[in-house]
Length: 518
Image (cartoon, rainbow, N blue to C red; front, top):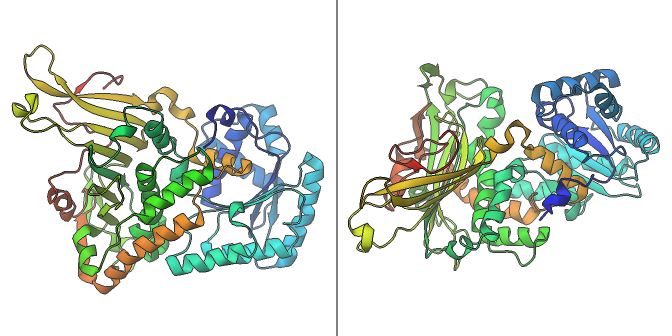
């Protein structure tokens, strides 16, 4: 795990950063702003260069203008200091590249040698592939054949999800990359692992003596993980109709958050020890036995026409580039179990979907209640204690306990306390991509997914996908703007639980002890 004090002060080693797909949306919204924030905070020294790579022609001046516009629109810092911006922009160059032509990579290698000499870069190379997964292999081969990997420094490959379409395709992709890069040189980004509160899960669990002893099936009733989006598929209809929520969200983001909640304490705070424990948690997931088991525990939904805030919303099948009879799921809810000593019998409920009422990512830990016939429980309907990790868009921790209602004898009232990290730091909260690019440049792999994590997650969700292919009747519809198919409530009700409210929509009878303007 990264030492936070060092994380804030030490500049990453000098390197050439190659941004493949530099004219794309990810570079504009996330990568350019992240690099500028790192530079402004001193986490990028002067011995670096950024090479933007894409097919379309651009001059260096045009490329730098694109970067400047990106920072103005999406960065938490503004490029309003002329001297700082000029120094930063000098490190950016652009090259039009046909990624299928190895001669272009040889030219890129010549450009790299010039940049090494100009900025005194020690031969380190970081390749960021903001490209379609089927291009990862061919581009890697051309890097090697074009001489880009022969420098005296380190080489690191950063790739975006999705990593394959299923376990078989992921294995083929990984085999291609392993012909060029070692596993320790491959950094698979799941940007949720860069979010502040996801990284805080480990600290809350392992740095507080009153949580870890309770972190087991003796004290926890259930765990709920919600990742909801208000948007539809927008302009991604063509991609999404071949992917769906299961592959787009569950295989990566949901599985990663689940493994961090469920993992055992690592023997050392070392990247490989931490990732070892995450893999063990994923391996302990109870596999679905058959199609009937999937239908009993997994809900597959697709949004139909609806409304939000009195605004009419199209159904998924009316979206651009989506088939009119599409069976692609835009919603998944599931009840999963981890069959190990710590978690045996504790249900983990996950749900994710598009066109839901609020945009939020939260993890709710519901603790078991006190015995019904003991003291206050015998006279009051006590609410269970909750610990909530608020990941997005608000970041913080929320705790709900029971206490005496002020001014009234023998009346117990739920009481809530909150640490709102977003309220303290506000707009200057570091973005996930800042942390992840910075970590990759330092070789810190804790919050990147290792191959065996990817393989284990695919193995699990492939069973679900296979069952759905065999049973098209499992698809349920929900109105856009609602919380999903009706079955999602029954999934918890069968076990005597219910979904907890999210995104600060607390119950009316909860008293706030602290929390600013709550």
